[in-house]
Image 1: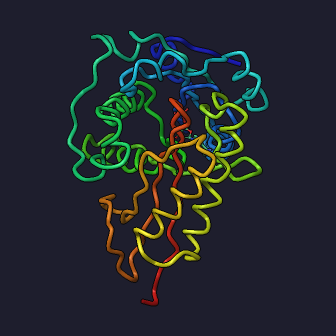
Image 2: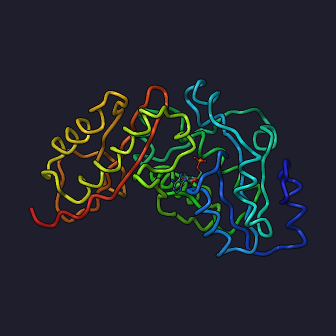
Length: 284
Ligand code: AMP
């Protein structure tokens, strides 16, 4: 499998092979969630660049950055079935940040303000900075992202538009473990007690999403907190319901609108996020 550390080498590689290029940006410690993006990208493009880069500017907590899992050998193994189409881009900081690892400043309005934006100050500026650099260096035709990071995807859509980057953005469904927990590189940091408790996150979200709980924001939130915090292994950081367009959290829900539930849950220092659509409530 081709592994490049310098984007210049990728540019040279594609110079004589100009053809459709898909990009799957990741921070490594790959799992089947990432692989679902890679599979889709391989179907839709001749070549696929999988970037593996732990982007320091999107971490607002140094400890989180320090303990972020790394396993390039395992990542390459997981990617090996697609090796005839894939190029791994695993850069040093200076390749993406020639002037030092600093975020640019962006204005994405309400979509970057709440939820992850509120609880992880600077996070989306860091994400947008690295994605802008990746798009400019790799020049992909298409780029693939997971719906698990729904808010991030909206931010990248806004970035793509504001900066006229011209990449076709594709969002892929959340891949889950058997018990429903959204796959995440961070899941491997959970203790067995936290891991068992974490299955409650999606189970509760499913009940809320299918309107099995009274259609009242505060009741839904309390239901989620009670269920998820039952064993005391987890703590709910936020539970928000927002329109899927402006991502502004609402407490009064109107009928015939497309809402989404967003949650972040802490297992000590490990943050788990998840999101589901709230089925349309056309009947109050
Ligand atoms: P990360 O390595 O966590 O930065 O994720 C890289 C990409 O994979 C992002 O677009 C994520 O949204 C996506 N991703 C992460 N976990 C999942 C999952 N469980 N299902 C689908 N996509 C995912």
